[in-house]
Amino acid sequence: MRGVEREIARQDWTGMRCGCGGSAEHLAGDLLQLAGRGPGHQPCHVSLEDHVWSAVVLWEPAPAVTSVALAALADGVAPPAREWFLDLLQHLVAGEGTAGESASARRGLDLPQLCRDRAVQGSWLLYAEVMSNRSVGAGTAFEILTVVEPDRARLQRLREIAADWLPVCCRTGMCDDGQRVSDR
Ligand SMILES: [Zn+2]
Ligand SMILES: [Zn+2]
Image 1: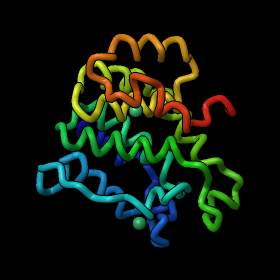
Image 2: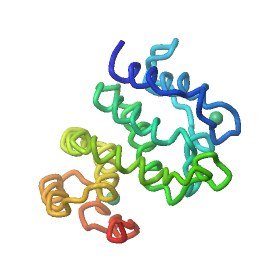
Image 3: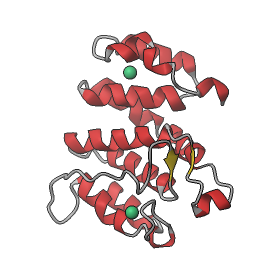
């Protein structure tokens, strides 16, 4: 069993309520499929919208899915899957609140903050992604860092080093503007 499978296996999916209203159990299969570790052995896109994240709110499985997405990057999943996991991670760190009717909200959990705390622990993966994945992934990884990286000088150095291949919004800092880093 490799890193991503192990990370999926160690989460208590059945104990979590999914955004779709049912048990989060189905996410284990969805995430394996995304990573290309399901029965088809090919990465296959599955949208987790309204299961893990909705427009601006997150659902209970979000922190567990953050850990799985980082494990998938660490595990070197194939290119389309890397971009899907990066997109997923971006939705998770950009969440603005915990879904109001969820059990997490009742327990007073701040799911977006929990996701950002986990993502920051894997920030080395995001730095590596910016440096090595010079396609779409570099911009997404950089934008995640603009949300979670507390060391702004370090982020600025990365921006300069990767300037040749980062999209213009990341190069100029345009996509930092909408972020709420300064408020945290
Ligand atoms: Zn669901
Ligand atoms: Zn950007």
